[in-house]
Image (cartoon, rainbow, N blue to C red; front, side):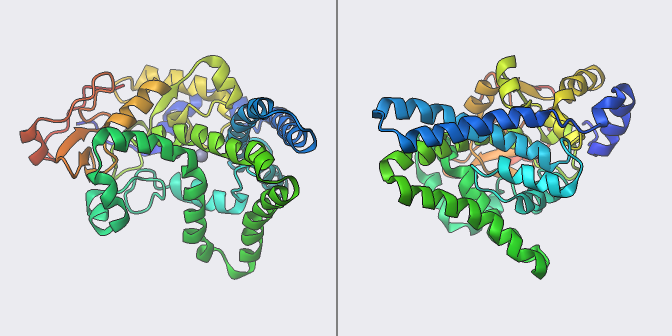
Amino acid sequence: MKELQSFGWYAARVAPHLPKKAFNPAPERLWGGLAYLIVVIAGILTISLTDFNIWINLAIAIVLGPSFAAMGFLGHEILHGTVVRKAWLRELTGGIAFFPLSTGPKLWVKWHNMTHHRHTQDEEKDPDAWPTIEEFSKAKILKPFYRLPASLRGFLGMAFLAITFTFHSSRMFKRFITEFKPEKRASVWFQLLFPWATWIGLLLLIGPLKWTFAFLLPLLIGNFIVMAYIATNHRLNPLVPVNDPLANSLTVTLPKWVDVLHFNFSYHTEHHLFPGMSSKYYPLVKAELKKRWPERYHEMPMLQALAALYKTPRLYSNKTELVDPGAGIAYGTLGHGLNPASIKPKEADAVSSTEKKPKDSMNG
Ligand SMILES: [Zn+2]
Ligand SMILES: [Zn+2]
């Protein structure tokens, strides 16, 4: 079995082969953010101030949704410090970028940078890791869901992505607010309430129909896009005792123009190696990773990853196996027998002997 290594171990081996400028902030990324900001403001104003028919408003909403998501991707990058160095400017621009998704920058840094990155796929410490079967047995809320047929569950799971980011973000607020020093809590609250007050104010101003196109529908679309990445970044991978990005992360592949629009957010394994590096250099990191550890590296087209997500249950029976508690069927994870090109449950006898030799062969 391949020994797990920390992200620092890989980073130390790859860094000398990257150009020096890759480690500098890339403030030119803000131009992309400004373009999205103009699109968002113009779209919302157009819907608010004009009386176009529903179809034009729908077309505007379909542009706004991906813009909400893309601003979130840039916000993620900004708050990792890869765009501007000054702390106040980082928080201001990060806050603006996350405004449509209504996640405050202070909360995001605590949740994502300080917890998800440090403890990726650790079942107890990673706030984004999916539950194990033991946690599931404690969580009553999930049980009726797992009594539904697998296909319906897969469909609901996909539909749920359209609200998951907003929902998860509010759970994270509840989880982390008490971890902020008391003198900081007021500003964390402000960063939550200010965007929401703005969006609710807009509702009162323009009425529910226009608001649906100006904010609600774009928010659902934005949620779905953001979650299509977040859900496939780690959820087909095993839980790991060592934070090894090549074992616990997946890079999805998309047409180049989508990567341009989404600030290379698809390069997630690379991001976990170098979270402080602008994602514009991740294709260079990827080439190094594939040269050195091709047998460890996982990548697959986004649609294939979503299909694999649709076809597999989201509960870990042990660190390397996903299980459907209702049907008692188990599936491997990436690097442990899950072949995304042909998803099949494990053989019944393999299911019971869970921690036997994991198979390493079937990388994506
Ligand atoms: Zn991640
Ligand atoms: Zn990150």
